[in-house]
Length: 468
Image (cartoon, rainbow, N blue to C red):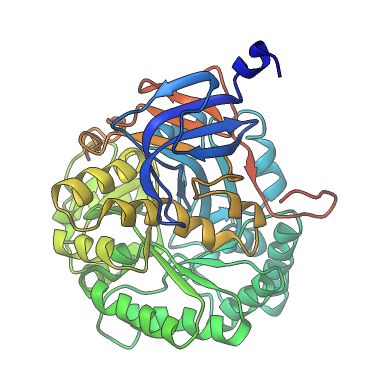
């Protein structure tokens, strides 16, 4: 080898001398990371040569964060997510009825990776003859009517078609479809089991009293998983369980100890947000959630609601922020060993822009509720593992290892934090100077690189193609 050849860079890009944290192997040490053709090609304790070398001394290098519950999926949303260290976003709770159209709208145009479920809600809306929309109104057929045999057959046909076209999972929002029965849930789960897919569920009930409560809602999922073999995933456990969250997590933990494949997520905020016209606000909502009108905040204006303004907005529709949890509930959810972190991201709520940085800044550095290694596991590896049975390509994400995808976040543990608030929900996180997607810098020196679109579809194998 000539001296010139020996001096040639081995890698497209090298992250030099960062604190590399790999949640799968447990590595937490200063290393150079060499990237070649979108893949991690070396993790070395010796200096590496790259065409581009970035000195990240004093910074942490972790797998890019994977958000399994992100509703807002437009270009401006992806920019905020990237600044929060997120390299993959999936809309798995509500999902879509048209998987092909959803992916086609983003192919070649995305800053970060993207994936979607086939959704029970939109498929039920189609089968019941309702107009397409994000969530069904409380007075819609989707919310009010049990499905006939023909309608249920159409729902399951649409879901099966979505899986055949590569949907990552199936989403169910059972609180938004209160007329759907346990038999309908089982029918959806049976289709999911056929495709080795997880079922991402907004629980049917809130509160801890009465014959239908958060515990019966969790049991519905446990029973469905045990009966069909399809895994369950409980969306935003602290938002639905509220003060019963520790007991709900114990119920999930007990089921897992008996062999049930059930996982769970939370987000680190004391307030949720949803559509005011939905069945969530059917009569009795105050008792179910333990809140009243003054605990509701209109996202568009920031005003707190009264009985009169609630009634007005209930007619017109729109997003309402729901202040329903004390901080100790959020802390209990974040610190539980089973919970992964997912934002439930939607414009108008700070969780959309700041979830990851809030975990790293507030709950790791400031309050020391969890360790840095635990946080990275919850933000990256745990979500990747949830999808691996259906999407084998996820085995290459959530890790900083040779052969893994070069989806990486570089942050400063001493300064990382969220800035988004309920009044200013679109403020980008800080302390995250570099984010790479498929080896491409999408955030550099804290600035989004708007001229690149390396995001790829997170999609299962589908009929007519061979994508993983």
